[in-house]
Structures are given as C-alpha cells and as structure tokens.
Amino acid sequence: MSVTRQPSGVRRQAWRPAAALGLAAILLTSESAFAFKITEPVDGTTLASGATVTARVDLGKDSGIVAVRYYWYGEQDEALVEQDDATATGSIVAPVVLTGQAQHTPPFGGPLLVPKGGVGPMRLLAVAEISRGRLGTRSIFDEVMVQVAPKADLTAIDFETEKPLQLGRTGQSAAFGHVDSLGKIFELPVVGDFADGITRRISTPGTGTHYESSDPKIIKVLPGGLLQITGNGKAVLTVINRGQQAHLDVDVNVNEEPNQAPLADAGADKTVKSGAKVKLSGLKSRDPEGEVLYYTWSQIRGSKVSLLDANNSEASFLAPTVSEPRTYRFKLRVTDKNGADSLPAFVNVRVEP
Image 1: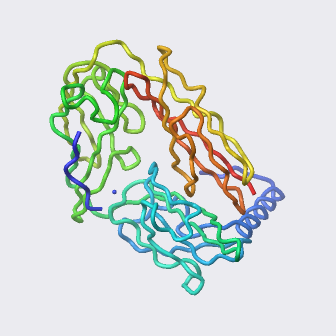
Image 2: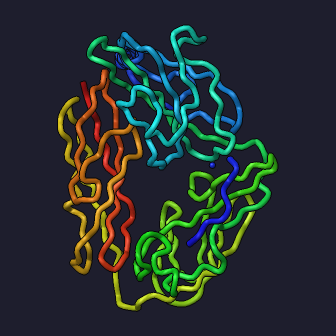
Image 3: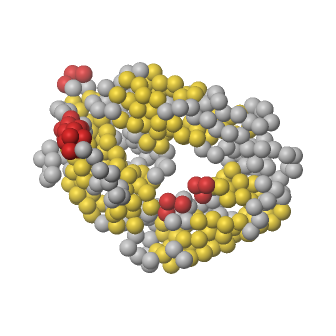
C-alpha cells in the first residue's frame, strides 16, 4: 500500500491519618531532592500545540551535568534517543527540540516549543549528560506524559491510503509488511486537516479517533485503533473524530483457510539493578493452531537501550546506569506463518541504582 500524502505537522482523596500524610510529604520531598526530574511541564497537563512553554528540571543529587536535551515523542513512538550518544546526533530520529545548559534561565531548561503537528498523548523525554572526566560521559533521563490539544477546529479527516483498499489481491499481498490473511491485524493511517492549516496524524484513540466497520465478519475493529481481517467480501470502514467522518471501501480477498490470530505474552514486569543483563521473554506466546511464531520486540518508553535479538522469542539488553529508579517499557508482537498478527503485549522493566 502506498502513502502519497504527508502531514505538515502529528478525585476525591481518601482520608489518611496526619502521621501518614507527614510521611508521604517527607517521601515526596526526598524524591524531588535526589532524583533528576522534569518539574515543568507537569506530568498529565494539557498543552496547546505550537505553544511555547518553560522546560524546567530538578537536578537532584546528580553532579557533573553539562547539558540536558529534550525530545518529543508520540505516545507509542518507537524511535527513541540513544542513551549513550553523547553528541545527541546521528542515530537519533527525533530531533533535539531544546538543549539546556547551566547558564540558561532556568538552568538546564528554557523555552520549549510544543510540536505544531502534535495532538493527543505525547511524551517529553529529557536526557541529561553527565561528565565523568577521563571516564567519559553517561546519561540519565526522566520523561513526562502530557496531552497536546490544537486550538484550531478539525475541518476534515481522511484515510491516508489507496481507495478502495484491496487486501489479498495481486500486488497487495504484502501491503502491511506481511501476507494478507485471515486473522491479520493492521493499522490504517488517518490524518486530520485543522483550521490552522496543519495536517495532523490522528490514527489512535488517544487523539479522539473512533472506528466503525459495516461488517465485523470481514473487518473487525479491535482496541487501540487496530483492525483485523476476519473474512472475505466488501466492507466500509468509518473513522470519526470531533464530529467529522470519513469512509473507506475495503475489498478483502484472502485465502479462506481458517486461521486464528496468535497471542503475544511479553512476560511479567520486573525490577533489576543497573548493569544487570535483562532478558525479555516471549516464550509464553502461543498460536491456537500450534504454528511457528515470528517475534518483534521494540522499546516505547525510556531513553533507548541496545536491544539484542529483537526478532527472537527472547530479547535482552544491559540495564543502564541510573541514579534513581527508572522504568523502561517494551512491546512484543508475534506473527504466525500465515501472516496473522497478535495484539501487542507490553512489559515494564524498572531499573534501580
């Protein structure tokens, strides 16, 4: 499948005894005093796309910090900054949006532009470079999740794909990276035109997008904005966001051999120490028909680690050096020999000093 157009931007609190509240305050104060932390923007806040906000960090107990680099990522983006890349160039896909240094106001922070093409959940990653003299440098990081909301109205939305979409026909057999087959799970790019003249990607539910299928026996809508081939025939997909709609005719003609999608299992969350070799296991993943599985591991939270054997059932990486506990998040997808994909499975690895 070819893509021809690119977007221009993309409680009530329970009562607790006073002593407990005092202890909690001490713990929070202790954490802020010792951990490198983004203090502005605040985690969970809503920011206007294209606005300029102040980036501010608390250095905590870490000394020798020479620069802090900031990066924006979408909620599920897999293009992460290399943690040990002292120059913050080269292999990095996301651009550095701000390099904060000691002489800046505030120190190691400053004016931060919220992506003009941003919409929905976004992660702000701050990577601090620490000088260790002749030993070189090392990095520490913190990240917050914010909501980015365009001030402009959404004027139109559209599926960014060939129309009508043909799955399984000649020339389309590997349109989404694997052979089209019953049980296959895929995503469709959806873009929105906003009144400020910016086209933004709005494919995920986090951006406010909702999908409907005219025939779930042909195309079924799954959680997370994913779609699954469930049978042959014609169906109409409808995408809805902020009162706008778009429709896509889909013609499915795949091998009718019964095939159920495999199930991915990324294992249980774990806690490790810095420097430890961490093994990610997908061995509990399974295929209902007992077929051989193909594995794809990727990292979606934390500054990037070097992930070995990312296409095997077991991947591994070396836990980075951290000053305070930090969480790394990984995603696993498995595919059977007929091309049916699993829903993603996730695992968190908490790295402690």
